Length: 366
Ligand code: AMP
Image 1 (cartoon, rainbow, N blue to C red):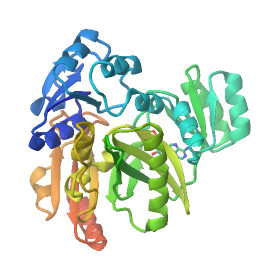
Image 2 (cartoon, helix red, strand yellow):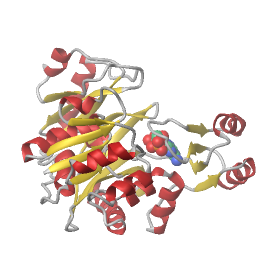
Image 3 (tube, helix red, strand yellow):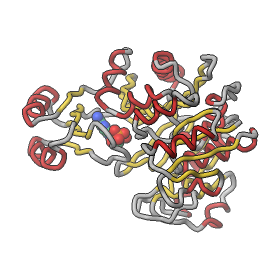
Image 4 (spheres, rainbow, N blue to C red):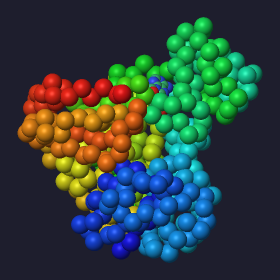
């Protein structure tokens, strides 16, 4: 089988690595000269709206998927008319625009922060009056890793927020005083079977994922089941195929949806060693019409991103249970260049390993 992937970053790279043992070869479309997937997959160099490049990809693919959600929807549709594409372009469309996404959650009865659509200054003033402070002003589209966001903590920050972001389609969200951030990774097969990984607890710094622990401590069955129920509503509504990530704010017993990603997700990288079947393999299996693998954890995992700088590999790998994934990218400020996962038998051992890891390396975002 031949899998085509839109986007050639580390997510595509880890998908291709998972596809290989299944006898599935990958071809990736990416506009950059030297995408990090190049070491493990065939690459077609081209823009995502280059019909000739898309046609080339269609010719060498039995199925198509994508590693990021900002593929132009009309191009995804063009491709999906020629080769089966999973998840569908509709899932892309919902997740590309924060207003569409939050309205979609609300329609399915999934709690979201209070939100308002903001285009003009008058809309902004009305939204601030309704939602109040603190609030978060975000671009509706193309925001990632905390980019295109302004947290309005006090009324004197209303003007600076507008100066920075005004003039583009925006969303104003009520600031959620969350206890912690969680994510749920789910996967749905072509036959409609849904499986769920344990909830992961995510710590963001400077808008980027710093650390993820899975299974999250003290979640309890009820919270997990609620998260699965909400995810299933999304999966079913979109007739979804593949891995879907939903990021949550936990406020006591409440789960409030932040956003969804119709793809494999950074908070699921720990599933490579921490689960029976990783998110990457399950995504590939689902897209290619194969039976799903078990999402059961095989221990307690902690994942740290390597952002902006290269660690000393030998020092990190001395710690038992540690796995290093280096993406083969040149370190640049705020660039994810790798991750480290440690898997242990118990949650206590995981806490201990996390301390040890932090002694060996400064995982700060540079
Ligand atoms: P996002 O790009 O929307 O995932 O936002 C990046 C990070 O900003 C989130 O992981 C949260 O830590 C924080 N954040 C975003 N929106 C809100 C909100 N409405 N309330 C509180 N924190 C938020």
